[in-house]
Length: 224
Image (cartoon, rainbow, N blue to C red; front, side):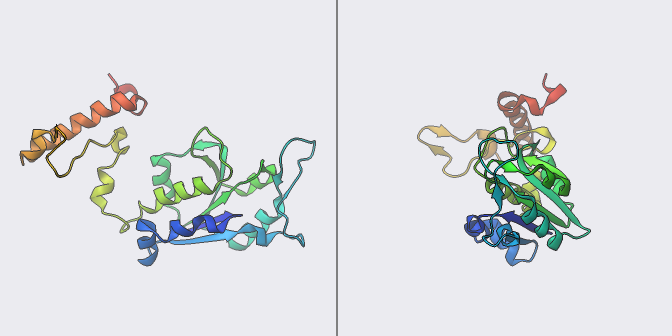
């Protein structure tokens, strides 16, 4: 998979690309991630990328030309182009799984007051990470890239992915490690029993209990 991230702040991604799971995925050539400063595609001498909105209003809008010029150079028949904006559909694990199937993803990070509306004619979908406003699309780009890359086969253990939250519309079960007793808090006896069938049943029950308590919306009609 190849992921191109269009941004005005390429240094924002420096640590992200050189730490933990993303670093290992890059080193194993399981994914290619390119950070592209679309300011370099501005046709203006001063590399300006924003301007005041027609009709008036607060703030500055991203101009069309830098984005169009950049997309013209990097788009292929395999590209799936995503605009990151608060008005998009809310990102979740199912969307991450859908995005994993693409060979080439292009993420466009916004900034300032917003985009010239014509930029949307380039994209396949608009995605948000929640109903709140950020200063730019860089944090959503980080979140989406991380969520998708970790699903690529070979990046992390397949069993770990299978047992994570949101599989089967349930949150993950509570987990514990050593010591067995800490400050009076004891690990549930069933997890120390070595009885795998009982442990599996306990974990399933805990998943359902936790989801009903914290995220009943995930269970839908099954939340009885």
